[in-house]
Length: 283
Image 1 (cartoon, rainbow, N blue to C red):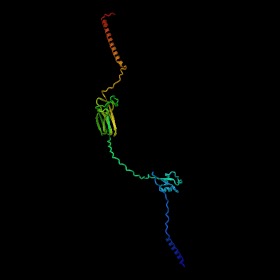
Image 2 (image 1 turned 180 degrees about the horizontal axis):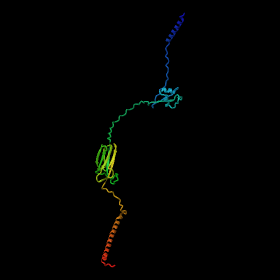
Image 3 (image 1 turned 90 degrees about the vertical axis):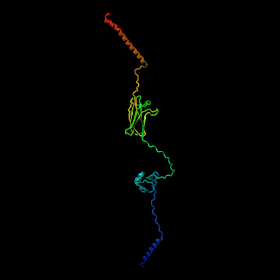
């Protein structure tokens, strides 16, 4: 009889084991995680988040991998404790690069025809010098004042890169520039000087220093006046116009008349003097 409780317990345990193995195993439902939509950048790169029910600033910051301070800086309307969050509000949570737009393949561009290679610039300039006959001596070249023939023009670069001298002559084309032009002159600082023929006097300085750049064209003028040139002076001795010769003629006649009267008076006095000397003249 002492073994009866043990047998009963053993039978109970075996029954439980049998029932456990006979029932189909049921898998426990997997815990559902919190679902939230991942924000997609707009074409301009801005990223927005729609506030959900139960959101707080901390939760929104954690979901979008930013700090609460950054969230407040991007959304200045939020108060200190984020108590003014309303479901449906749109918050700016970041700024990224513009979203890539897939380009629609279009027609391939038409190849352009080959263009001619431009000629490289030589980096030279041109200096033109005119030695003119300054007829009126004013130091300015007038259109009617011609070039002086037989003069010499010298163009020299101060560092010795260029030096040339030409003799002045009359251009056969009266409409063309009458001076001398020095072409293909390298840019730099130049001494320009002129030598004039012996029968001329300079009316302006015959040397000049100029600085020329590549592509420029410089013009320099030098003037000289012929020693044979005379400048007419106004005649102030004839204020009366055509009456001056008549007055001169009358003056000459009066002068001759005066001389004649003087000579006649002198002749009249000579006989009287002789009578006084001979004592024949009565007192």
